[in-house]
Length: 106
Image (cartoon, rainbow, N blue to C red):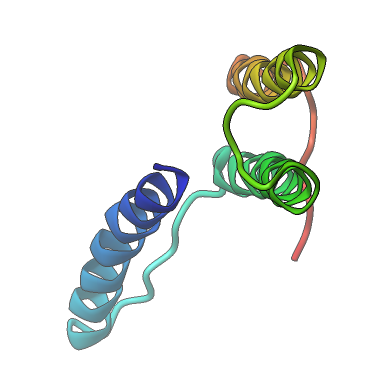
């Protein structure tokens, strides 16, 4: 599901940008995209998703699968994964409302 969401996000953002930039280039104009919150959201998504995949890989290596297992381990894993989701939602919301000031210069 995360892979599908990633592809949808990157295609949904990348394809319109590509079409717009080609169109502007053909007209002899420079295509500029306002910075917005995209870099922050992508970085946050990458950090939380890599952490999620690490947990799932660790569970597979130690327990033989991603789901189930001993009660303590499965509840701890579920809690960590829900917290990762909450971290993403909370920090993305804070950035959208300009509570977090993060403006990298690339």
